[in-house]
Amino acid sequence: MRVVVKDIRIPVTVRDYKGEIKRRLLKLLSGVKIKDFEIKRRSIDARDKKKMVYWVFSVVADVEGKVNFDGKVYPYNEFFLPFKKPTKDVFPVIVGAGPSGLFSALLFTYCGIKGVIVERGCKVEDRVVKVEKLWNEGILDEDCNCQFGEGGAGTFSDGKLTTRIKDDFVGFVLREFVKFGAPENILFDSKPHIGTDYVRLVVRNIREFLLKSGWEIYYGTKVKDIEVNSGRIKAVLAENLRIEGTHFIFSIGNSARDTFNMLIKRGIAMTSKPFAIGFRIEHPQAFIDRNQYGKFHIYLPPASYNLSHHFKEANRGVYTFCMCPGGYIICVSSESGSVVTNGMSYYKRDSGYANSAIVVTVDKRDYGSDPLGGVEFQRGIERLAFKMSGGYYAISQKAIDFVKSKETRGDLKTTYRPATVTGDLSRLFKEDLVAFLRKGLVEFDRRIKGFVEKGILVGPETRTSSPIRILRDEKRLHSVSCENLFPVGEGSGYAGGIMSSVIDGFKAVISILGVGE
Image (cartoon, rainbow, N blue to C red):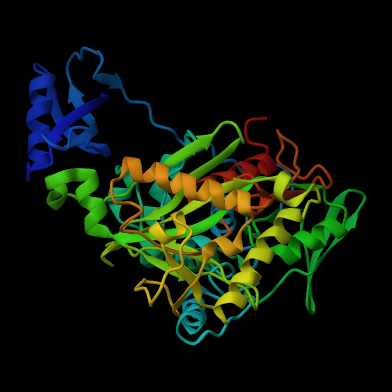
């Protein structure tokens, strides 16, 4: 029998926590033979950081004997993905080799199906070279950068594998990541991350698996049009290339502005959706560690934080987003003459600095009702930043100066490349949005003392989530305009982050295969 034992609390000062877990299990399950156990979840409880910080474990144990199920011990039920070979001909064409695209191809493969992936950017190892050229020399490739290319935008990120959605697929997806090279601790950490270095490894390994399984992958191939006949796509068109299929999964990412335009011209229904804009804030990692864990930070990995405040009277929210412990602020521009920032970490999170986006929600009040109004709103901020900085340099400002409406003088040290130029970030945004960002920073400073005084702002950050939503059938997940077009992932407007994008793609595959019907 397998049982789950929850809420095993062990001080972080205990070095042999596995030995301590075993001792706790023997005491808790007295009279029952424990054959083996494995950690299923590990989190940190720092609510009483002045006295002690605890590891909190959930454990699955193989036992023999009669078990008393109570508030800590539960039966263990494991989820198995319902693979199913289709009864109809399926030849999928997947547009975009980001998380939702690559993992959709994996699921098809496990069901005995192969198809085609079309990616506008290049292979991940070639993509790294292009990105380094932007960061070091200010040379941008508009089709292969931090937004476009094998692995998607998540390749140059912290590699977070957390998600707010509660779904049985989560465990399966994590096991797939480990299968293709990710560290095993992501299977039980409450906030799993693999860093940009492991994302790149996993992406390469998935690619090789798909190629050996019979998939075709076209790189440097931007889909410029679709052939639609009687409410169905017949083929996608790239330069000198036409690819037919039975089902088309568009996992295009939230920056595929030209593709959004093309789909609208072809009658694919979409609408604008709320998102958020702002800048990133950077602190010494040691400052965040001490604040979150007190003196116990020396026993723990780099600390993160999650802050938010809702202004009810205006129905606006200011919150932190994509927090990167031990990370870097990076240039993620995808259009010439524009500046966009984001955060990235390696697996070890050892840069010595912590950064996070500070963003305010925006909606149709700010950019109108046109489906692409949000895109133009983003573009205006990004182009103004390029004009202000004179290149792919981000604008930097002391957080305290931004709050007090003061100009920052002198150069500021940040992790951003190619470089930053000190300036007034308030010039990038509408006056009312600036006011909310200032109020939000003041509120966050109440929760983390010194947050404003010690922080440096770098911006702008505009690509927090997709500014559009491609309308789709709630049950079948295909476009309401085209019954064999399945928009998935971040670019579709239904996901945000690596995990939710993968799971969104999985659900589209299951719909295509008719699993559960």
